[in-house]
Amino acid sequence: MIPSVNPSGSDTRGLLYYLYETGKYEDHTDPHLVASFDGMSPDPGRQPSATLTDLQQLLDQPVMALAKHARPAKHVWHTSVRADPGDRILSDEEWAGIARRIVAATGIDPGDGQPGCRWAAVRHADDHIHIVATLVTEDGHRPDDFRSGARAQAEARLIEKELGLHQVAPGDGTAAQRPTSAERHKAERQGRERTAREELRETVRRAVAGARSDEEFFDRLATAGLLIRKRAAPSGDLLGYKVALPDDLNKDGEPVFYPGARLAPDLSLPRIRERWAGDAQDVPAAGREDAIRTEPGSPAAARRGTASAVWQAVVVEHGEDAVAAAHIAAAGEVLDALAKTSAAHTRRELRDAATAFERASRSHVRAVRGHDRALRQAARDLVQSGPALGRGEDGATTAMAIDMLFFLITAAAHWHARKGHAQQAEAATRAAAHLRTAYQAAAAQPLGVLYQRGRRLSRPMLQRQTVLLREALPELAEQILAEPGWYALAATIAEAEAAGHDAAVLLSDVAGRRELGTADSVSDVLVWRMRRTADLPADASHLPETSTAGRRSATRGTTTRPSAPGRQRSGEDTSHKTL
Image (cartoon, rainbow, N blue to C red; front, side, top):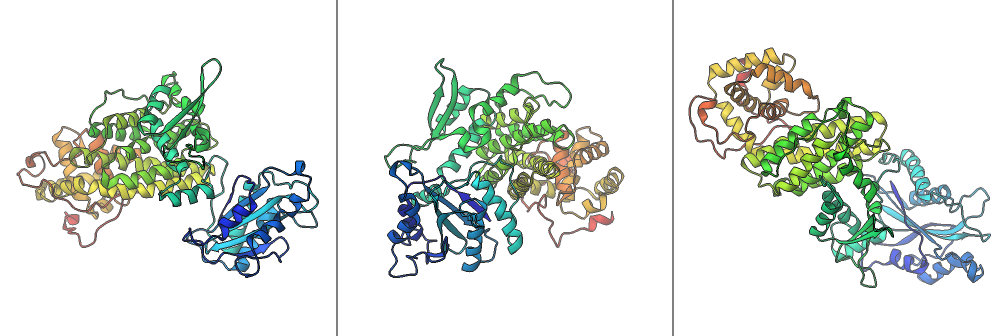
């Protein structure tokens, strides 16, 4: 249950008109009062003789009783209280009880004989109510509504438990500001999928990813089509910035600008500058991951570099908190850059993963920049390499990068959970779920090719690799041999041996470097780890067939559904398990 306290307003009747309006909004059905300060307020929705003016005048009466100069300019308090989509539909009586608890908790109408404000709760949809109050108490004073938003959230957590509703993870004050009701309804009227605030937040995040200077950052914002206003000191030093969408206008036809800090706490200019300042500073070698400096290359090379950088970011699991926070924040930049440059069949899920992880990238543990150079360089390389085509080596390295990111994001979820960061842990878990889906789309073709190669390996070679697997990974061998992905792993082992690697040592090393407990298909995960570590081509469709089976067969373009990190397939030939 989410209470959203909006900024104070000045037009009680205008807000009531919106709440009772049924012609413009699909979810405005049967608007009516469920509760009010006296339980007897006129209801324009259910009482034919009642009007909006009647209700407005009743609510505004304590305000109008004050001398004109003493009336607060912003006297209208407004919050919506919305249930989770998975919750049952609450009755009017339950919503009435919720409204009374919210106004008491926030100080609007504290009860227990204390003077309160006049308020009314309107329900015009199944899943939420709106509470309107006027910010003058019956005895003519200002209510004690300090931090009313935080107080409403705390009360909502108690209500959820008592009513058996979905329990929202408690926050810590580091979340980005939610869009207001006015912003959401404006987006609906304009036919936008998201509010202007949300679109701007995503665009600014992507502009930050891998950037190294103010100039580069603002050039990216301009290229993305945003309007920019910069704030400078009398000395000329740049202090801050605001951005707007060109077509998001106020009632006067002027663009609506948002300061970076209002989009997210870490998008203010001083916080953004910490990122590229960290790129330049000298960081102690302990725990540091130096970036591999590369010239802009192909999308495939950038994705392979991303996989390597993510693979090295083990400090999320084992390092100091400040270093872990830096790696987690930089992982968000990598996700933003990957989503920006992804192919069509993975774009939506990667974008959703980046959006979800945005909440996980901030906590009260302050990141020490400089330790995240490799990840920030990877984000930069992704942006500079341009959009991916999603096939061949390009598509295979995308699958490899997503696979590595999945485990880093999962490690971030575990780290946040250990620290008690409930919202961040939940956000990272949601991001990992989107990465699973993106991985399945990206990995289908390259794993399909490897699968077919593995199926064509000679029986003696499969026997030898089965023995090798059991010796290298005795605790995982039987599970791997039962997975359809074993054939792709067998083909990868054969390629590694042909390239001169000790496959048993390589297999043992990649299995031990990161956890495998969250993998649905261990074999698929090991395929990408081995191919990255052994520097094997991510896409093996161009290799001669003699490198694995000793004979050539036309397999280019063959595809099967991948089994990890998603799922296994039934009905698979597993006769190799007895070899």
